[in-house]
Image 1: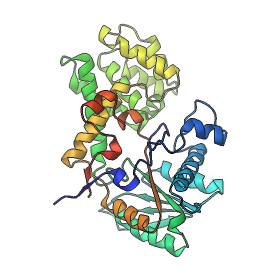
Image 2: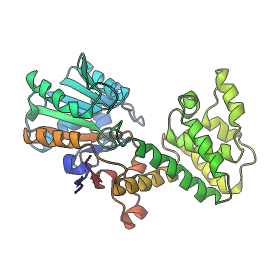
Image 3: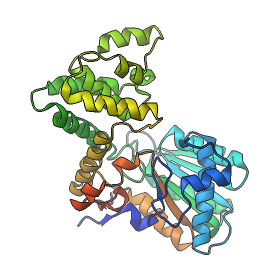
Image 4: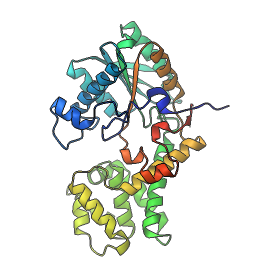
Length: 350
């Protein structure tokens, strides 16, 4: 029989999404931390930024204090990407706490290896996280004075190399749902899928900024020939990439059903909002929840078991995601329909 759990079973509401507003209201908000840490107003640090590491340390210390725990001496990061490695390096550079990182993936066709590079270990099996933790114990880590920050997307939820494809599929389905809602059933769905798949490629990152809001919006406007992707591709090849804002402002013959979206995107991008396509993100939460419900998207059993074991030794466990809050926390209408926050949606432990 499959065992189900939620991220909150491990972390409670000690969860941080892209906006760095803790889901636990007893923890300091980002505006409070900006004032405390001297961070710029109206700038939200991303995981690759040193400022993000400073926010994480501050939040971890606040969470530890709230449970009357001893002062933190160590912060460890468990993730799957270069950004998680960078976060570990930035935490180390602060010289406030000892820091270690684990970067994992399941590569069943490769030998099982755990390789250390300074304070970061890289593994070809998620199961090796237990060996990594044992090594930290040997190195003198006191788990009762340690905060464990676990990445959510493609680490704790949909571990890379196992069920991570379901995360990408959920985004693709959400993109198609929103396109259909805006344009009806008469638009070229196959062309939209091709445009979306193409724009997800690294070669388009100069335009999309590797931002799914931008990717979906560009695919949508290209499908109805408001944007000319081949012409934009020529510009990219020449190093003359336009921005999405420039394309939207210059757009001609935008159909009436997309005029409100065009206006929304322009206003939110000009305001510096990295998540301008709210409708898409709301749909993404729905499609993600569906995959968690039917077992296509699972939680990492290895990370869950490790977290539980280290909690018994006094460790503080938190989770973080670069996912926008709009695709992780339901709107009032979605709450009324019974949708839960992402970290409180049950999924199979696999």
